[in-house]
Length: 169
Length: 152
Image 1 (cartoon, chains in turn orange, purple):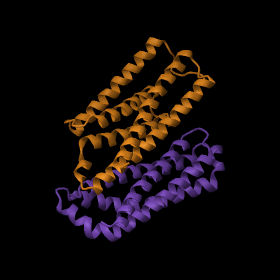
Image 2 (cartoon, each protein chain N blue to C red):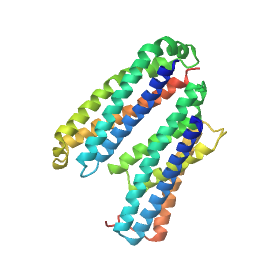
Image 3 (cartoon, rainbow over the protein chains, first blue to last red):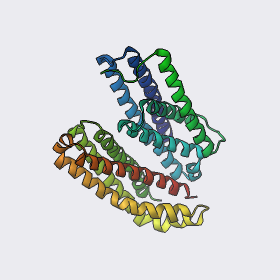
């Protein structure tokens, strides 16, 4: 197995764990909101999912930077200025800082959820969409619009389910 | 570039990232109402060790190879600002990161019993230091990509 394939596999693994984790974290959270309480089982599910999410993020960052190292050492430095790469880096930084802001209770839960879900899915789409011709600015503007849309969608889902925003633990 | 220098460059990047991951974890846990001292101690030690290894490997690469072989390429490229602005800033900011990390790690190891007892005070200051280390880590990382991208 070459380094290239190993890096690609670990990068995919990180993405799968992250996107899957973020999606299931939201589903479990919405389910707990509907019942109005986070019971022991749901709490365990959420804890495990968040742990998987963190592991996915670490794998994704290390494998992503391994990609960059390979490009640099193999003489493809121009790839390090690609708008797609810088959009992914920006979105990852927003996601990481968003988690801190959420933990510090500086942003509401619905916004934290919207940033997390949109960022993970955006990273997946940007990673898969080779040949995307958009500029950095276009991608970032689209990302912020999608965060807003995700926030509205999650609010509508919560309203439809008739749930409270603060389940009891 | 020799194999040793390639290994040093790779070590500098990967260990630097692992160091930032450690201090990001410290930052996150310090924001909790009741931070776990054991986790804080291990994460800060993890972050400190990796940052120092990254510092030494990057420093050796910079002192023995970058200045003579990479800097002229970057300065002659279409992106000379990658060195003039980003490397010049990176090399100075990078110098004091491990010192901040030593301070944070020592305080966590020696004063951890005060973290849950006090409201604000020490914990608040440590949150700030951990946040500064992490954000500087992000900036230095991005600067590294910008500089590497100009080597063509």
